[in-house]
Length: 377
Image (cartoon, rainbow, N blue to C red):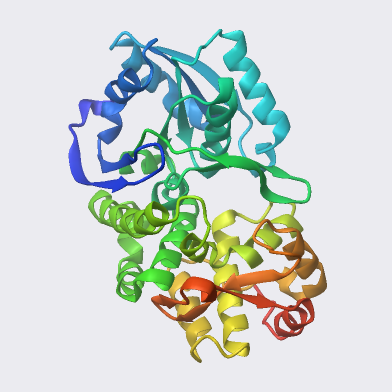
């Protein structure tokens, strides 16, 4: 499969362990051409539902469905309006109805074609349809390739917060093809690198520096450099989620930047892109750590420089309203016993471990610290 008959150029395959037996993340230019073989192995009926937002479907669905048909496989289209605002229980229900109406059985599979929103929705449909069917991740954005497609988290948003309704449901495979990124503008490409920077900040300071030094070719979509970044990010994330699939301990470090970031997204009614929210959230949470004496002095400035290399923001006007943000943080699913926790980042590449993976922060402390944060954009 693929426009122009491009042959497969493999950059790497990263195994991820899971309770269902594990799955491969295959990265390479043209790797989406292996989708028919993956679907044939996952769906004994030869039928699959392809879930995509309407924009991505217009770009890639016909090509994908034709390739599947060429191998005797049937694709059932299930599309929805693009954007985080569609990641709801209502959309989940509508997509599930499409599968029901097509009379798909437990011998089908679901293919997620798109970015992080699509992966969350499609994965949740797969996790719940007939009590669970296999699904394949075919990420089309940097954010999904680098982060969202790996780890088995699926779900939808609730008016009270992001991802509050969902399930853990591991894919049977992730096919990360940098050729999909040719349809993205620079701003959309940059968003994914917020998560890549996060991986470096919490696990590998050298990788964080490598990303910043290669920001231009990454933003330009240089397939070789992008492939290397995807492989390294997946390696780092796979090491964490393989050891803690259900977020009982170590996996919590992957939430760095997301406690503040999710609050910013909610405050903006999801007009603030996720990558921007995470970039601002990382700087803010590092500053909170510095103020509490757990992060080395200057850590927030180091992260600010890393995200700025990709043209990502390090602050946001909503920081001028800390009480509203803190009220949203209390509702976040990462809150425990009503107490807000943030990842204990000690310096670039090093976080707390065990019971010290996160630190509890009083609401009044958060308000005080955020009030002193720069609120310009």
